[in-house]
Amino acid sequence: MIDEKVKILLCEDDENLGMLLREYLITKGYDADLQPDGEAGYKAFSKNKYDLCVFDVMMPKKDGFALAADVRSLNTEVPIIFLTAKSMKEDILQGFKLGADDYLSKPFSMEELLYRIESIMRRVKGKKAKDVVTYALGNFIFDAQKQMLILDGDSKKLTTKESELLNLLAANANNILERNFALKTIWVDDNYFNARSMDVYITKLRKLLKADENVAIINIHGKGYKLITPQAKEE
Image 1 (cartoon, rainbow, N blue to C red):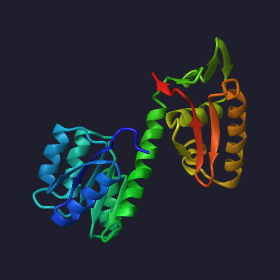
Image 2 (cartoon, rainbow, N blue to C red):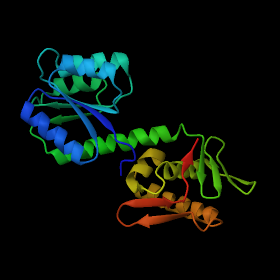
Image 3 (tube, rainbow, N blue to C red):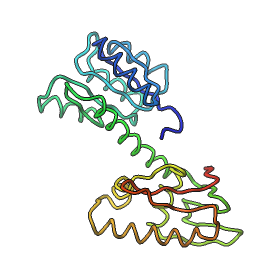
């Protein structure tokens, strides 16, 4: 679920494909801004704030690689996905050297592009979650920086793994936290042993949160977990 509309800069010189992609992304809840070439794309990026960029490589006036280099001079962190009819290894390497987050060769399905975008935005959200200092979760106060869970003045010091996992759950409160995403974010690898370890920490967090009957971690079969809380304010 997208809490606030993610704004995407889409640069594609094929008018029909560009319009199709734009309309598709809009129907999926994104705010998509379509530009027909690299120069127009750079002007738009310099004037507006975007959460993600999708650039066709072969464009008039300024190609996708040149556009990405210019965008990187303004913003080193905004995710970039390249679209191209090229499949040469050298082109792919050039794209990643410019800081691309992903690369799709034409023809591709719009569903695949959507999957790549969602995957990147989950990773970005996970990184931002680390910047949040405190969360209000029902009657609990969770201080992620100090790794403290506080209820009615009583504080419980969490382990690093407990704190990291609760931080991800809190950042996605009342939404699904995908199991594999949590594993790869905290444990790096989603192998069997790490998965069992995460189950143990989920059980520990459930016991800690039982003191407030309005807060709970529930299983979402086949997907992951959801932290249910009447409040999920962050400061």
